[in-house]
Image (cartoon, one colour):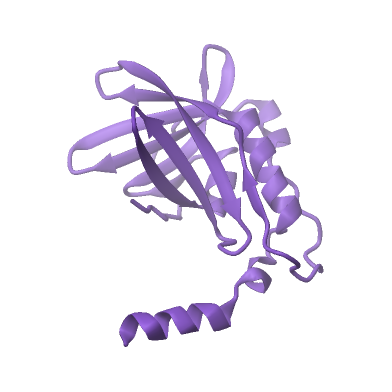
Length: 173
């Protein structure tokens, strides 16, 4: 299931601390030309699922970024023997480190749980609401690595447009 929503948000998810501003991944000037494709994966991230009735469930998930798909971050959750893969705009996840972002089905923003700064991802669909939280520092370190591999603003240089057009033509034909 893919979600890729951007834009302002109507209500706050949490209250960012002053230290939260240090979490924004900084990118260098995007003058590099792309080399070999890069894949960046995280170690398992401890995700906390908060259900509408305030029950919580802990489960692992991982983050993955591929320079061949430079605008996206994949979050794969493992529940029992199944995996669920969500795709988010990298800039949406970066923005959610500091302030509430997104609208509609996906909203991301800073939060705090047990004195630990977290990133909360709220997912909504047909009267169902869940919130996922993970430590903000873990998310920020991962995103910083993605920005070192593909600096913000240089994503377009990493797209293989010939391959993309070829795939589109094959899908239509």
